Image (cartoon, rainbow, N blue to C red; front, top):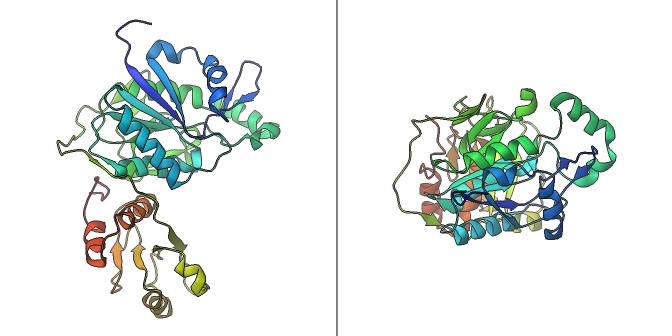
Length: 328
């Protein structure tokens, strides 16, 4: 390895399933597994000086506490690093990227996130699933995703982004897209920061801000998330409601939130966000937001509530475009 190799910290939180030369799945369950796992991908050390950091194993649950640990490691290693690659479970990839976006605002080092096509070692016994992925995509995608991620981490990006398949997507625009085959994720407004096509092509006109870095330690607000179905009543007892710090409701695009549910919200006295991407509701006494992805709205709600703001300040901050989350 040349002395000019850039230092990339590889942070592992799950999503580490790869196929070895014998076609068996390997995954990182503990820090002791990392050397054998990395040995399956020697090309990574040709691309950069890789330093792995273990946060959680393949079968561990990813929680807001996990995101806080990742943010803390990135913050502490920022002076040593040229960039960061975070591997997360595929079902938490968007949320992890958004959590880092809100807790490390205006961060100056590139943070790229990626994953394997599958998460959890229960797939070890599902040979038909693995064979289907091998036949369809040639593997579990992590090897190629990591090669791309490590190269992208050595380039500047405005904020955390996801690289999966051929698409580089800003965290605030990423949505699950199961119809897109190997890419898995797409941009809600079809705006990509880059694409992989005979090389990695990152846009040259990305907008960077020069604002001061803001770091937030807390993202542990526990919120109740409801996907409202018109005509179906909410059935939550008082004890359940009292265990939450806030309420997030995705409302229907076709019907206003029923008056009975509005009355329940008023009675519960929780900081409440009503969300629909296309439609801004007009319910009083709550925060009504639209024009951002649902995942972004949920993680922003958790972040804002963690700041222990008074109701008016909570509403104000939810309506501010903090990390470019509101789309044009």
